[in-house]
Image 1: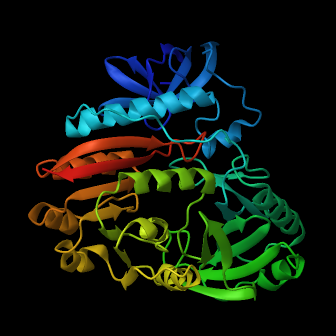
Image 2: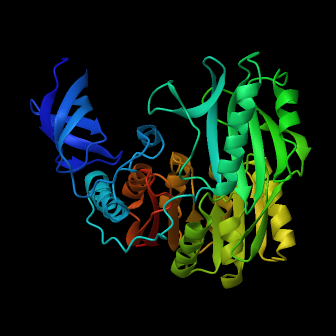
Length: 425
């Protein structure tokens, strides 16, 4: 179907796409806002829905914001929606997801956010691809097409400075191979860590790139060896230059960041999120599950008697042990293990579990243990609304939801951080 058709967006879905209807099927159209009418070309005809492409807008929403560079929508799909409407969208999506997946009507608390909607990210990953030369950029959703990136409007000034330098270097360096796949840029204050992810240790452009990166604000440079094609970082990291960690201060605590260790990407909002988590906890013996560097565990340690921090990533565990020592915290025990293997022995002594899992949510073994040996309360910090509600739907036979708080961690994106408190029935 090549001729565009006139459609009206009836809603905005969880991916930030306009939701239209045509021939008794839903049509998802990226770039359309609720209430807008436009000419849409049908790209794909699926069994129960269409995927459309906006050809031309005829009526424009009062909530629309002008976007200077349309390619920015590939990594910031809500950039064209004003910030107040983004907050309302996330609250509505939260309510709708609970109702659809768990058949629950929940009272959603006011959303946690701050007013800084640009320049807030302290970490980005850009991809490298051979086109006419090595280029840095982002992939379009569900695509291998690279959009070159000269400016990242969501990233901090220090990251933008490093990105500019990398683009300058890539203009000069001749193309040799395609071993380099991704570059991760992290920063705190004005210090920058660069991590070059490669498919093998031998990497032709390495020395030339390092020569041009002898800059005072770039304090750490690593080469990371990829284990597979679908992750941005592998297990092995080799320090090429500078300091082994990036020192981060957060909530009065110090954290040494290793290359593959997870840490919060928007620190001011993360601090508000942690304060909310601390305010919800009623127990005194706490399991900090998927602990990372035990940042939540350390943040709440002064208010509880004991924290068991469980984490499987070795770099994160090393950083956790070092930062606990640096922060002079005495009541945290770090356990290096997978959650499903370690958690059972602590369920009998813990009052509270704080979960901060990856997007995939809780595994089936852990959920079965929580049903068989319920704890008094669970604080679930989620970066994926659908897996969060899926897990709550499983746990609702033994736990009741007492608090749901959305967190707008990343303006202009469709990421949905959420804090939920569950109490044993």
